[in-house]
Image (cartoon, rainbow, N blue to C red; front, side, top):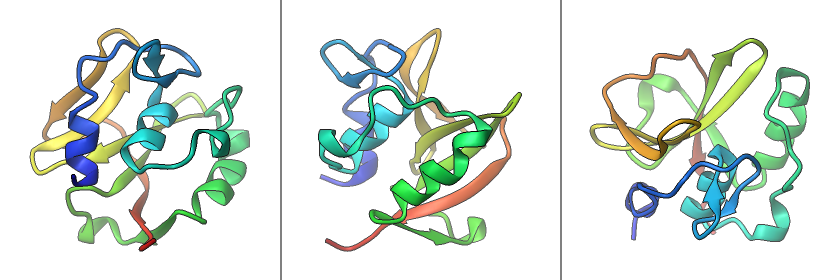
Length: 127
């Protein structure tokens, strides 16, 4: 299963802050961890995706991902957005848009381009 397909399989899960399991709900970091098969013990449950923590987040992601140019983004890449007010957000790029954890709607696939600026485009490293 591709990363995008794995993310799509989570569409419909409810949103839960710090959520790490589909049964109880996911936030954007939980969605990314499942989509990219990152072991749960590697994903902090108390993590806050705020700007001051961006270096910590990027440092944690670099063991699983490499940065690619936004112009080279393809389905299955992880997108890191500037969601405003010193807040970042993660999503999985698909062929029609991106899958992400929306606080009101749960895990959804949003068609088209993101309403948020892309800070980084990340591609899963070969295992």
